[in-house]
Amino acid sequence: MSVELLGPSESPTRKPRFLNPDFLLLPNEVLLLVANFLERETDINSLAKTNRRFYSPLNPYLYRRNSLQSGSSALLWAAQEGMAATARTCVLEGANVEAINSHGRTPLFQAAVEGHEEVLKLLLETGRVDVDSKDSDDRTPLSVAAGHGYEAVVKLLLATGRVNIDSKDRCYRTPFFWAAARGHEAVLKLLLETGRVNVDSKDPFDRTPLSVAAEQGHEAVGKLLLATGRAQRICMIARHCFWLRWKAMKL
Image 1 (cartoon, rainbow, N blue to C red):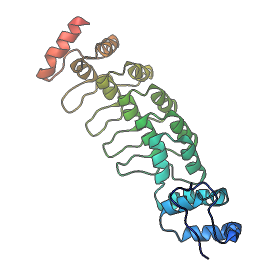
Image 2: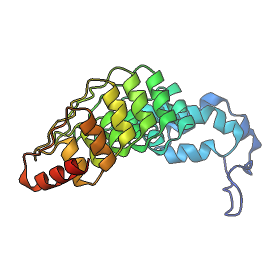
Image 3: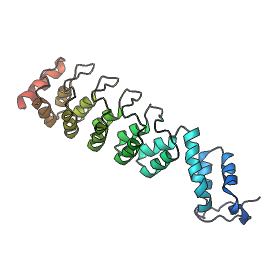
Image 4: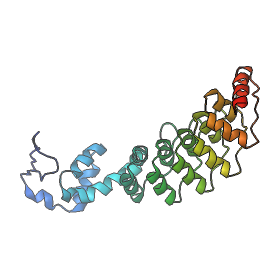
């Protein structure tokens, strides 16, 4: 069967000018067999976009094939880009919600990194995700969300009741530490409200959330931490002592 290719000025969404119109009448089984012989997902995608007749059977097939043969990369991409509709289709077509990328990050982790609340909710609703997974740096979704100041994402993760609030990454920094270092007061309050956070954890340089907040000039955070009555005013490392004492006197 001979097929005439679309010209450069023709839209791929238009009905193609097949020399044999009966091609459009092929049963789905034959279309899927054709798709099965295409090596690249981009080629299947192009064929699916040719017209509505092809799109109906080939688009779900494309998602299923991605799940089985490409490590559910479509779901990882959708989570990173905040494409909730695409993520939902991936899940419905059997994507692995615990797939990981080259950095050891799952779709839920990717959604947390970018602050995509809707995608995060969708993944949580599957009931099949590890909300406390760790990437190659031993950071968790809560850690990155706290560090970026994504209040809504932090709320969602805490609401699961399945996160380790004081989980430490490769540098022994907790979600609370990251939030203090970046000056995210609202996130710190959410973590404090759990009553289970260590406000005085230390990294390898003996820096605490209070010392790093003082170092970065986050005065509101400093006041919040001192108000807990649990944060040490003096740091053990000499180069931070002046900052802490000076900030403590101002507070």
